[in-house]
Image (cartoon, rainbow, N blue to C red; front, top):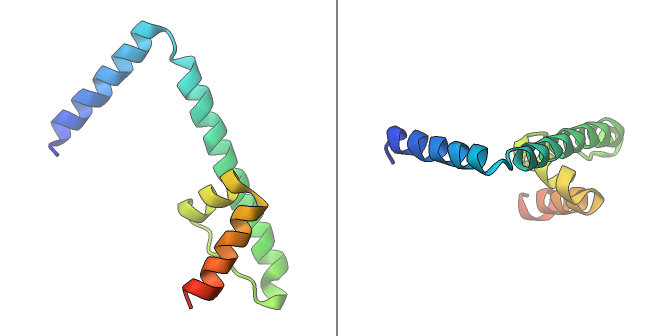
Amino acid sequence: MNPIVIFAIAGGAIVLLLMNGSFRNPIKWAGRLAAKIVAGALLLFVLNALGSGIGIHIPINAGTSAVSGLLGIPGIAALYVIKTYILV
């Protein structure tokens, strides 16, 4: 897709949000999402630091941070199962 079209669509969406007056809700939602992703990265860091003695290591990147931040402990368990049994 042409970059000019993408910027035009994004600009139009911003203008519509500003005209609607509901620009605060998407910013609040994006802030909460970013906070959860950062919390997921910190949770993975702690898991890697504590689990290094028994061989538990999950790489920290945007995808794994998002999964662990949004899903919590079940997300980390799913990441560990995927890494151990599927990505052998």
